[in-house]
Image (cartoon, rainbow, N blue to C red):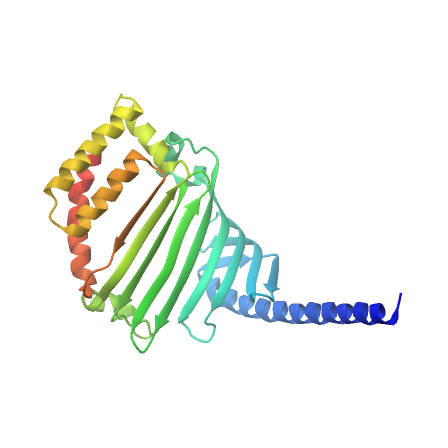
Length: 286
């Protein structure tokens, strides 16, 4: 082994030592903050975990093997991993947050009356749920940008929602007054995406069985009702949403519905309008 090789190996060893040292420090620092957060949440839940690690390349914090027992509840919730990609740890209410929960174990037998419905869809043991959240809040502009709120389950599907709201105050002292300022909150845009992993197909099959018909005839009857609603609908957004629903029924793989109003719209007025339309149009599925 020549001198250059020895020097090269030495540099690699030093870099590995530095990397390991920084990672240990970062992990210890992250674990300290996590323990502080858990202490604050102790009133609401008992939380335990096995390991905290930090990925120095992306500085992601990973918390593994978590057990959560909500206050006054005997059942513990198991979570395989929580990943914190980015977080504002200097504010009581983070101005930005990006994180995911992977492998939330949901035992169907613990769901009471809902367990019967899920078993009717072919889910008999447990569901593994994944959650994702990514948002930023601009305190000066009073704008909340929900880049992503997602929930998915193995052998079911995944839904992701994004939207942007204006004139919303998320200061800790003002948070309780949101219910009173709701009419002043402005809606800017929104998008809903759903990717099916058998849930829609299970629902359609169950619907066909309850209506004592085959799957194709059941889908045709739903599509026909949707087409009738499309012809009568005057609201452009609702009409476009119904068109997308029709396409999804014909080929239940994925669906995407977006709303981009030409000018900011009061959220309260939109919710009232949407609720009326949804309640009206939901009758077609009965």
